[in-house]
Image 1 (cartoon, rainbow, N blue to C red):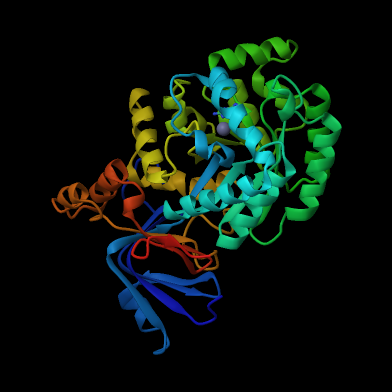
Image 2: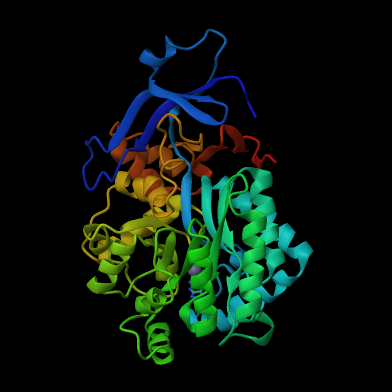
Length: 441
Ligand code: GUN
Ligand code: ZN
């Protein structure tokens, strides 16, 4: 850990709240020539170079990123690390895709060496894409949880993760039992929850693969450990929803199943939420549950178009997510671009600034981490990304035509990918540098 002060100079953009569709608003802070001052892993000061430079000790080193953008580290609110190796698998919608591609690869995670190698690759891939916080699914195997937490801890990424719970309607060798799932989760909570930057998430895969007893016991854990997370899938696909309705005929809606077993609360994150109604949204708002919006996945599996306006109008916390491996990119820039297109099909505009909000502070709010990450306010953890608007020939050509920052950022989102990430910092440590093209351990 650096115990001396460092300053980073560049164009700083971050959100203090949801900018909505505004380009000039107090919710959005833009500092054209700014300095971000970091000490002991945290942000110490932030402001114009003119103002801040005079306050710095003469010994303070400045790292010059002039001409580039400095933004908060991206937050991926829903991703499956075991699915890295089946990303881009052809031709199926959700339930067939699970059977054909997902379950077979998840069986491989019982192998410790494979889980460790994959975890290291996965965390490096996130950092290379500017993601500094993620909420990840594992498999039913406890060792898959150990592997991903160990890798995140080694690389400095802030990670929420947990053992997948599923005890029915899935392949034999991917089943736990209500009791074993409960006991394994308990053990993993004790081992990993609130250990440095790691937090535990109770992870029932979705209502269709958990028995009533498993849902009840997960609800018990959710009550006994109220600061753990809960992550699951909700209302993604028409066949999935019909199946859940068959399995739980007495519940008003899919979300009502989770409510009945005590799984709607603060720190509960529901993936997808495409086909929900106003009553569900009201319940989510009242229980402080959050939504992970997964645009590349929703397009790839043909699941449907998420209604962002309805969620935000009803004051639900919404974060953005890749949902690898139904999602098609680790890049939150690409994910923002696909969110824009999904919303276009819903006649809902999305500014570049609001897209950035969803990928940073919106995600932090969805994960109840807004006191730690999500923007560059002094006191927060120094997680940030340096973005290069000239990183490809096409992008350089397009951005050179304008001085307008919104236009530049929009082009970067539409045309960008990991090539735009110059550097990624976690807790003030450089964990990825494109010049070295590697992630530091
Ligand atoms: N629903 C249940 N499991 C999954 C999964 O692994 N991915 C997606 N996209 N949806 C799911
Ligand atoms: Zn998912």
